[in-house]
View 1 (spheres, one colour):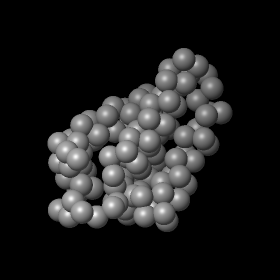
View 2 (cartoon, one colour):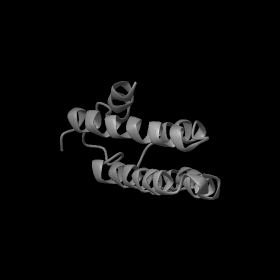
View 3 (cartoon, one colour):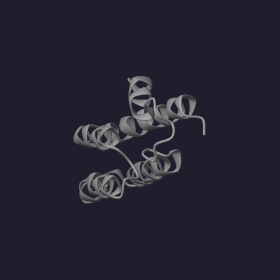
View 4 (cartoon, one colour):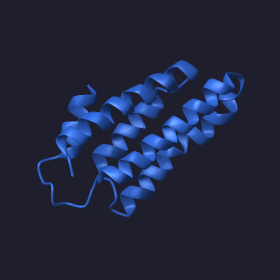
Length: 109
């Protein structure tokens, strides 16, 4: 699934400006940050959840600035929809980790 998402988001046109690895990495880094916070304080998950879901708005903003495309925004949205507890956040983080590896393979530079 992560590999399929990476292929779709990498696309065929390597010259376009959307979905640069550094932009995608910023989103991944934020997901890792929230996962780390939740692992350290799982009782605060409900308090953190609105901030975790705010990543959707950040992705939409990045799309508006043409830094990511619709496919990436949808990937983030669908992933965050499934985050309902510390374990699902951790699972999403692991998915994004795999996605980033496959994305780098699909779009090396």
